[in-house]
Length: 280
Image (cartoon, rainbow, N blue to C red; front, side, top):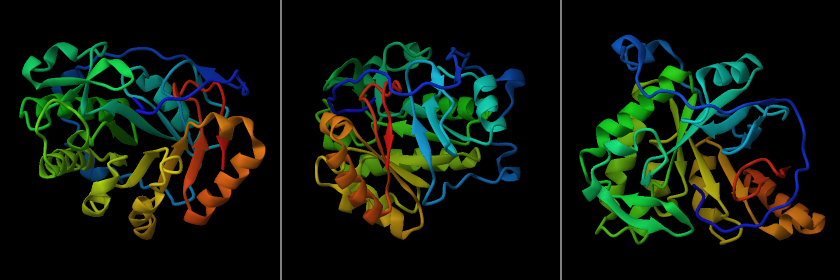
């Protein structure tokens, strides 16, 4: 989940909606999603892609956007197909670098790979990305994304080496894990986003298809993301600042900066539940 603290506003948008529902992790008939990956052209979002990000609540499908980023586990294949039938692409979110105790595969994690709790997220713990037992779990999640029909994935919390995880992770440990995720996603015909991990962008820009960033404007970090733009790959940025949601002048000033950088910036609630949305 996002690692910044935000405030809330009442709902501002209504529209068509689809309900979230859980899905099993097992694949039918023992099929291997990598078998037909070569026959599927991998989705590459355009630099000017319009997008929406919602991980909680009933998905509002009424936005005029090309790309929806939604939860892998809580969204059914039928809901994904409905979005695609309406001309949308679907990116499926899961956390690759943290343990979430409510996920259906939570019992599969090695207890020794669970580290400190994430700041602001009491139900999540950092993972030791050096632990080889994580690989089959992550492969199964990517299999699930392919089986459900996702166009791509957003693995979250892939910058543990720069946080207080409880493990002595190095930058090389993180690069190895992140490249593993990218390689396995591509083997299944899935696009993959690099989530935050700003200090490793120059090393990873060639491995990932686009970037998703939280609050680079708030923390004056946006220049680190320009290698993606220079490579022709979009930067999907979200800001959670209350002022931006309530002050039109501040919002327009931010959007001017986002347009200058060619970023695709949204202003959203931290909970990503569609209670409000402003797009630059």
